[in-house]
Length: 80
Image: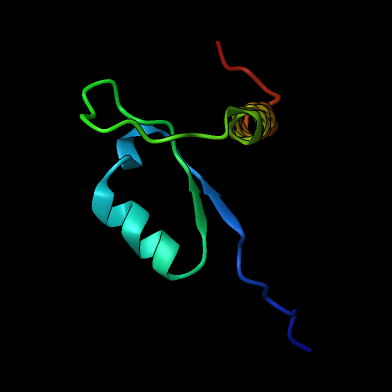
């Protein structure tokens, strides 16, 4: 059984991916780039910061998962 894979409607990314080429490829594939513009960008590009806020939630979730992994891999016995 295969899971149905749907095409994403938007890509949430940080300022490191703010490039015209990246934006163009995403738009040609029908994906809305939600990337805040860099401070040195000449032309201003609108960003949906309400939608971009979800990226922060995802980053915090992965951070919490990494913390649990660190606790789970610690040894219960200490030598010394």
